[in-house]
Length: 231
Ligand code: HEM
Ligand code: HEM
Image (cartoon, rainbow, N blue to C red; front, side, top):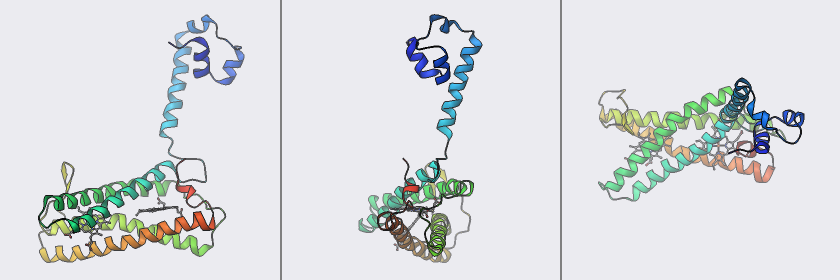
């Protein structure tokens, strides 16, 4: 049960509270049903707004973009860890195929999430860095972000094409991706080379990108990294 004082503290605005003095009288609880439901409605709208507000006060990235950024870093760690560990597992072992399966699962999750992230990027402008870095650094960061998006979109597509051309299924949980190309082992081999090349380039792209972020944070001491850290 909520007592009068508690009711006032939780549900009344400051001005309503002041108007009524420090205590609520019992008649407050006998208000017409319409007034009570109006207050409940306001409370509901307040909670709805608070929970769906994906923007944050400048100068930070939108909350959704920040959460996706760090979630996708975790997925990349999974993608690379699985492919590296797979190399250590015995050929034909269950562990080896499980690691390859997980590699694909993490990779397809990146492919699924990147579109939401790209949409967020188009809707919410990136917050300005302060103090403003030289123009060449800003240009370079845009090129790097573009390359990282290529990595997140093209690498999984190549994997999908490679497996389809090799006649292998591409499962994503219960769903099986349709085959966009006909069986063609020579093509599968060629696309495999591209997938592995782009995937391996990803180590460098992510490494340089992360190093630049840390350099700005610890050496330049601007707000580049803080803009990407949820409070
Ligand atoms: C952004 C996502 C992805 C990245 C960064 C990535 C990266 C890589 C890397 C670095 C390799 C190994 C390269 C080498 O051995 O030199 C590889 C191999 C491979 N990847 Fe991916 N990959 C991604 C997504 C996927 C997806 C979605 C699938 C499957 C649906 C997949 C299936 C494979 C396969 C089958 C191999 C070859 C493994 C082998 O036979 O040695 N990858 N990937
Ligand atoms: C330890 C690892 C990482 C660190 C420290 C890091 C740090 C940062 C920082 C500080 C920013 C803001 C830069 C700016 O606005 O100019 C940023 C943005 C960005 N990062 Fe990372 N990052 C990491 C990993 C990754 C990974 C794995 C990817 C994806 C492959 C990625 C993709 C992006 C993209 C595309 C942006 C631009 C903002 C957006 O569109 O979401 N980052 N990152």
